[in-house]
Image (cartoon, rainbow, N blue to C red; front, side, top):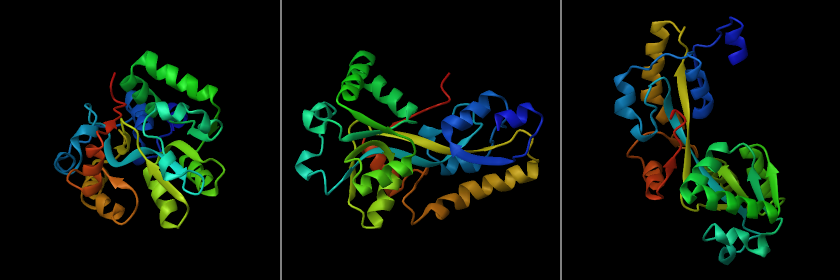
Length: 237
């Protein structure tokens, strides 16, 4: 999309993807501010960017999924140090694209301690894979007994299909918002209609799915806050 706009092609009015990718477009001055009372009234304020050029629509909780046939309940890690136990040698996988997750954890642990822990994890043998849904499938198939950093909705979808998958979280729980944005060149009438649809109907569209809407006072959002979730904020300069 950046290449297209730099080449003079502006072929989108609105888009939806992970917030860090949308923030790149905001910094390139390709988006317009989403001035709307619907956003302030309906959405979770703690994941809103200060500049207001995109709005969260759902939350991605990054969790640690395991195959219940290969990992006994008593062996489920209770701390980050547990992951360094020799019994996990070459039994752990990690999602390669979770840059924000990695940064949030290292910041929470302290840079020196955090980087040391991940180095030791690497020395213990970690299978690096790409694709959150693909990683969930690998856990369900038993190819990777324990996978770090997949989305909770992918794990829940596998569980709904009776796959031998469960998940847990080690503090801090890391939440990454997905978001919507409006092109700076979008016509005003389309922008207004989209904002109303986004605030009014988007949560309803997510109802019954395993995805978590970015609305306050819902059971799933409350549960994330209860886990002392750390919401990544890609708009910080």
